[in-house]
Structures are given as C-alpha cells and as structure tokens.
Image 1 (cartoon, rainbow, N blue to C red):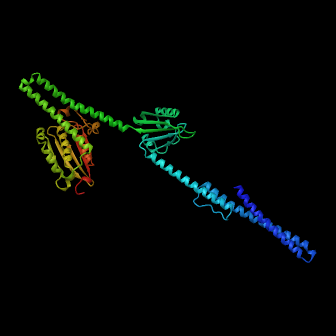
Image 2: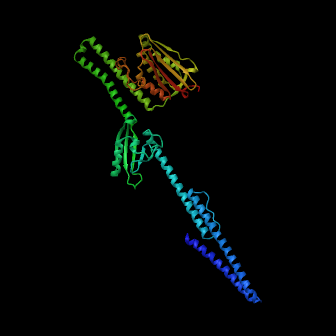
Image 3: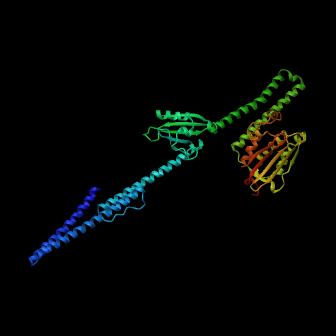
Length: 467
C-alpha cells in the first residue's frame, strides 16, 4: 500500500516541478525581450509571487485530491469492519488508488462468499444434528456443554437452548455418564454404557462416549444417547406375553394329561367316572381351542396382514344376528338384552363386517359372563356430527377403579379364577381394542364396582355411511 501511495506522490511532484520550470523558462524569455532594464527586478518579484501562489494552490489541490480518495477508502473500510456491505467501494480516478479500491472490493467479495458458505454449513450441520434419532452432546475440556441437539434435550427433558455453557453433570445428572466421558476423553477412545436415570422416572439410556483429540478450548468429547425406555417396555411385554401364553396352555394341558393318566389307571372301567373325566377333558380341549383361535385372531388384527373389507353395515341388524348365538346363555342366566339401536340410515356404518361382529361377540360374551342372574344388557348407538358412538352396558360385578386402564391388556383378568371358570381366555377385550383401532376408532371403559360396566366405542366420521 505504501509503495503505491509513494508512486502517486512522485507523479504529482514531477508535474509540479515541470510546471515550475515552465514558469521559470517563461520568465527568462520575457526578461531577454524586455527593453527596459530598470523594470526587470519588479518583474522578477511579481513572477516569484505568482510562482509561490501557483505552488501553494497546486499543493492544496493535490493534497485534497489524495486525501479525499483515501477518505473514501477509509470510510468504506470502516463500513466493512462494522458489517459486510452489499455495495462496492467506489473510488474516482484511474491510478494505483483506484486499483487498491478494486482489490479491496475483490477481497470483500471473496470474504462474503466464504461467510455465506460458513453460514450455510452451520445451518446444514444444525439441521442434521436436530434431525438425528440419537441425542448428541459435545463438551469442551472443562466438560461444559458446547453443543446439544434437540433430541438430547427431549430425552433429558431440558428446556431448549438452556444447556449451552452448563456443566455436563448439571445437565445429565448422572455421575456414571460423566465418569465414562472423562475416561473416553483421557484415553481418546469410545466407551458404551447403559444407565438408569432415576430423576427421569427410571428412564433407561444407552450412552456412547467418544474422546476427540483437539486443541485447547475446542470440543474434546461427544456423548451420544439413546432412549431405551420403549424398547425395554416392549421386551417386558414380550416376556409377560410368553409367560402368560405358556401358563394358559400349560394349565389345560396338565389337566388333560392328569385325566388321561387316571383313565389309563383303570377309571375307564367305571362308566360314570369315565364320562365325567371325558367331559372335563372336552372342556379343557375347548379352552385350548378358544385360546389358540383368539391368539391367531389377535395376531391377524395386529399385523394388519389382511386389508379391511369395508361395506355398509346396519348396526341394529348386526347386533341382532350376534345376539342369536347367545340366546341359550341369556335364557340360562335370565338376562335381558335390549338392542336400542335405531333402524335406518342413522345406524348405518361402513366397516369390516367380520371385525364388527367380533367386537360385539366379545363385548356381549363378557357382559353375560360377568353379569348377575336376571341382569340386563343395553346396547345403544348414537350418530354424532363427526363420529358414531356405540355403547354396551351391563349390570354385572363391575371393575375396580385401579384396573380400568389394564383390562385391554392381553391375558389381564380382574378375577382370574372366575374368568377361567367361565371359560375366558383373557384376550377378548384386547381383540376388541385392536379391531376398533384398525377402523381408526377408540374404545374406553366406564365402570363402578358392584354396579356394572359400560364399554363405549367411537368410530370416526370416515367410517360412517352417508358422510
């Protein structure tokens, strides 16, 4: 920069000296041509005064010319320092100062491109981190959080944007995770650990700690976390399901095996006793058959392997046809079943007829099993604006309040002994729940112990005919 300014100054001095020499030459010519020798001193003095005035004027003009252009450069540079400007630096002239201004414009243009690329890369990295399935926490050498993505904030139940700069132990509240990350950083390696976070309701976390070789004040460690709560819950449900299925199958099989051994031992020689054992074996075999059929039905509904065959169904007619299958059991317990569903379009619904009948079969069967002698069952349906509401109400033994949320679980029974005695498999309500949900609906239970139970099914407008 200094060499370019020096070159400009040299050019201005050359112009100045050339002009001054021209004045001196002109004065000499005038001096030689003057006829009066007495007037030349005055002429020389006047010429010197003119030269001084010209020199002063030239100096002022040249100084202002240079400083004004340098002021333009300085002002533009200050604007660039405060904020990258969109407009380019404009400098008048066609010399080294102008070239310097062009060079600064080029430099600023390149700088803007680099800053835009950095902002784009930062935004891209932020989007990637926030859309990761795993939670990610980056820490500096003092184990303070430098970066944390939204998934980690969700897993650890943190308020967004409040963790940057806080210590790791203050954020995760687990000494095991802090110790593991320290070891990973010190040994520059990767470590894994599963830990239970008690302060988050015993949430299970799988954590991976990664040590990073980095300079001072940079990120030195990463903590990757996964929420295993749902996985562990599903594993627990699977274990419970296998245990329940094994128990449900083992009980009737053990009974059948015992009856067979008794018959082989000689009981078959006594007709009455043999007939009793055979009837008991038949009941156990029927229970096994029902259990296997319900398991297969539940598996079919849950897997969605079979597409729904949606057809218009008259609810009143469907309930009447299902009720016919329970006529003997209703008469046996002297239970009155009232089908209060209106006829016509107000009770017409678009549904899978097989699933719909399965729903009513299980609900009516339960209402009979757990009803009181000479009890009542009322079935109603009301077409709302956006949904069809169906209710099955009985006057049975009811369900305790603390068990209302669990009755739709597989193999759950309020009274296990009574349920097995009545031939229940423990899968009926689970089948109802999944059949309703396959239509996009919901089912819930309202019950009062000793007064009866009401199951309420809601199906969305999409499944109601004439929508």
